[in-house]
Amino acid sequence: MKDSLVFKEIKDNRGALVAIEAEKDIPFGIKRVYYIYGTAEKVRRGYHAHHELQQLAVCVKGACTFLLDDGNKKEILRLETPNKGVLINKMVWHEMYDFTDDCVLMVLASDHYKEDDYIRDYDEFVDLLG
Ligand code: TYD
Image 1 (cartoon, rainbow, N blue to C red):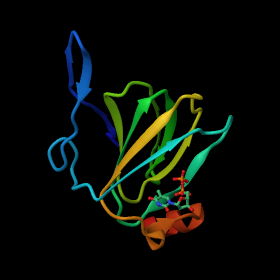
Image 2: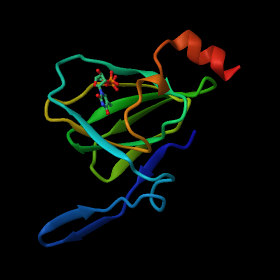
Image 3: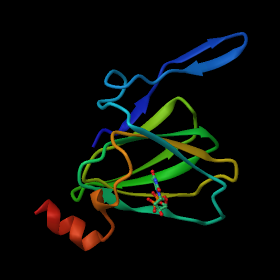
C-alpha cells in the first residue's frame, strides 16, 4: 500500500494554506466532506471497509492514528500535520485511534453516504477478497 500523501504548503508571513484538488491531488471526484471531532478518550472508530468508496482523511487539527488493512498487509500511519493525508481506497479495512483531544479529522469522499457500501464485519471483508 502507498497511502500517505503530503500536500504542498503555501506559506508566507501570514501563515500556511493547503489546497487539495479533486482528480489532481487525489484520484477521485469529491461528493461529500465530513469531519470527526470531540472524540472521547481511548475511542477507536472505523472498523469497516467499503465496496466502492474512496476517501482521503486529513487531520486539519490535532492528530490521530490510522490502521489500514488490505487483507495482505497492515499499515499504521500517524496523521499529525494538516498537510498530510491518508488515502483510504475501496476494500481497505480501517480503524482510527489515539485521537488527541483537539483532533478534527476531515474526510473527503468520492460518493454520498450509502450504508449498503459498508462492510462492517471483518470475516465478511476477508471472504469478499477471495
Ligand atoms: P460511522 O461510519 O459509524 O463512523 P466511523 O467511520 O467513525 O466508524 O458513522 C457514524 C454515524 O454517522 C452512523 O450512524 C452513520 C452516520 N453517517 C452519516 O449519516 N453520514 C456520513 O457521511 C457518515 C460518514 C456517517
